[in-house]
Length: 299
Ligand SMILES: *[C@@H]1O[C@H](CO)[C@@H](O)[C@H](O)[C@H]1NC(C)=O
Ligand SMILES: *[C@@H]1O[C@H](CO)[C@@H](O)[C@H](O)[C@H]1NC(C)=O
Ligand SMILES: *[C@@H]1O[C@H](CO)[C@@H](O)[C@H](O)[C@H]1NC(C)=O
Ligand SMILES: *[C@@H]1O[C@H](CO)[C@@H](O)[C@H](O)[C@H]1NC(C)=O
Ligand SMILES: *[C@@H]1O[C@H](CO)[C@@H](O)[C@H](O)[C@H]1NC(C)=O
Image (cartoon, rainbow, N blue to C red; front, side, top):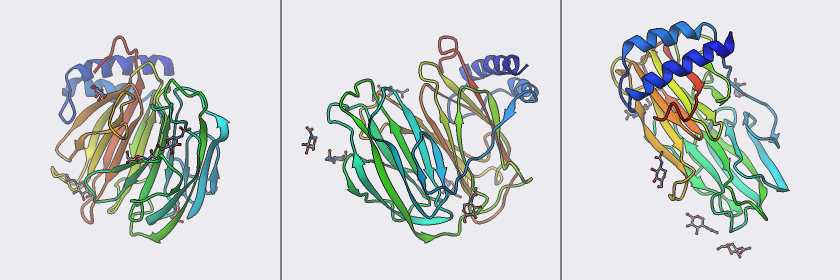
């Protein structure tokens, strides 16, 4: 049943995908089908953890200080993708310190990145963690996303250890949530997931882990955001493993209140953030996630 639903959803997404670029609107008819097929699909839940140290791939840290030790002093594998979201309770700034970094200079396609997210800020700032010591540029972030992505040449490389602590608290809504979803399973994220309306001052993260070698499709469909404006909006980033820019996260656009539906596709990690301002709320949105056959469904 689930397999069938996911297969149908993928087909619909392929059709929708052909008609769409981001930002933009897709036709209404396929959306009816998507909503129909949704009934058979899994609903994803947000993640959180009070643990102060994570040593495995992927996770959310909500403690006000802690760290990540991933494959510290152990060899890394090729084409790994791991993401950790540092929420830190309700943070208005961080200190971040890289204690150990074992990526050899010849592993030029392997990156450890700290992404600084600030509510109300136009764009995320992606900082390449390429040396040990304190990291500049994180003292006013609300949330940090740490991305570890290895390339195909990893001989001689080991993982990393970093520690963080929250410098000050902020007025972010405590209902802000963090998702890390594996694209291998079709399903739906509903935001908000436990109320009829989202709140003011939210900053949420939605990260979709790829199945490398095939495309991940995400379809956005709106309930309601703050009117037709962009005061409450989603920002979309795609990881581009072949990028030659200093960090491989690329900004792909913003989804504002007038957009009914949209389609995002990538063969690698996807990061979506949702920011709300100080007034007027709506019923939010849904994100449908579906793996697809790369050959049939290129965007
Ligand atoms: C994270 O910590 C903050 C502050 O203690 C709390 O309000 C919030 O509910 C926690 N988040 C989760 C998802 O547990
Ligand atoms: C790697 O590059 C850094 C900075 O360029 C340099 O200091 C270091 O010696 C290099 N390490 C190796 C093993 O080549
Ligand atoms: C997106 O929303 C945030 C939070 O309300 C706001 O600060 C920002 O200006 C918006 N972006 C645009 C382009 O309007
Ligand atoms: C780290 O990356 C920055 C930005 O790309 C660069 O300016 C700096 O030289 C790099 N440091 C090392 C040790 O490679
Ligand atoms: C990824 O980056 C490379 C190099 O900058 C570029 O040629 C390619 O078009 C990018 N891929 C996508 C999907 O944007």
